[in-house]
Length: 241
Length: 241
DNA sequence: CGTAAAATTGATCTGTCTCAACGTGGGTGG
DNA sequence: CCACCCACGTTGAGACAGATCAATTTTACG
Image (cartoon, rainbow over all chains, first blue to last red; front, side, top):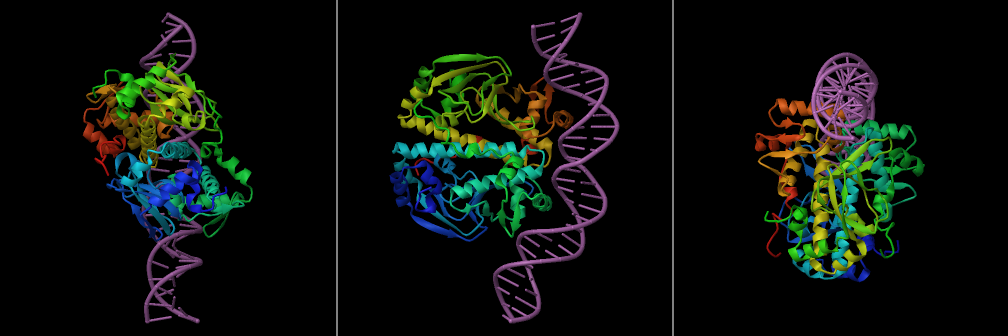
């Protein structure tokens, strides 16, 4: 909430400011990427770990047959791929959706920081948070109505982007192609279009270009069966044990 | 591979034996559950963390409307819910699929062990591994043919169960109801039945009760587009950095 | 044995995909 | 500054995977 820099939106949630600054000091360079360009390739050996500092990106997997599956979105302050810490390889492809800025930290330097208990703890908590989002996406995919699936994605992104200072008052710029929306919820591009029109017709969302306006958030969340608890891992934390 | 006790199958992969034994010494009790009973309820405050030591369980989420979505399987040596470390609450419902034995470790005691760098590191790696499986499930759900989805689940479970010493020679006892299979891959019970029959007819699997025999593993994995890399987070690890 | 849960089969219906065409807007170069 | 162009969005028609409803058979278990 009181983060001075948006670049540390998520890092700021999980890390003490001293640890966060220590990490950012290690950043070798801040690379820039234009929109819709690969930032990392799946399974490539990596000697750096990446933190997105500006823009928005997605994780995806190419399926044999040419289909693409988007498995998550990366917002400023997120690590692009926590798996690099474990395997030294990227576990997924990362692509920019908007022009992006990415801080690159040599894995070797980062390893020293892991001695700080707070840093490793934060990585663990971020991995758990990521798994929670993935579980929710998975449950969402099983949903019968694709209207609900799309609505659910909008609800989630609204909440995450608002927390990152990228949205407010139920208005958010979702820099997603309808094709990318479809790759996220598992429906075809053509069908995304019709689904969006129905959501508009039902007054659940408004669209101006790629800017989504949510006239009645409670109604949309009810319709989407969106329960935001999974996005707030700390909210329910107990004092001691 | 050389684990003396199956109960530490996964713990053994990520933890030094000394740390693993230190954890198991903290186990207050080993509770037993009959098949198909809830082990943990979603969002309940927890003062213990659970490790499955025998049997098989699943994580699931109840959807409004009564539908159930299975989001993962828990094998011996797995933590039932890593999220408890972060929030002090269970992040999902856990249900036994077979008779189960569960070690319960007071969260307060476990917290002390987190001072050991190897333990926290192992938790992090397990969370990353879980996320990798979830990403794969998510991509799998987007797959057009439900035959592929079911086949993919079988391939994954074969590999995981074999690593846990619960399967060998392409033969595994999958203690899943066809309904539960459907809840895992997002198709109806009736359709699961027809899909299984087609897989049998194509010679990709054989079924005797709930025992699956895979006559030609390579063929099944090709058909399922199963790439096991995501299950081996360490396999690709680099020496130092 | 008998009863409930699980598996199987058939018929029908619908959500979503595919193919194909057409509209549109914003950026680029002439 | 206009015109072109290409990616993106929109619309329609037909096909099909998978859902649903409804019986019936088989298996597991007390």
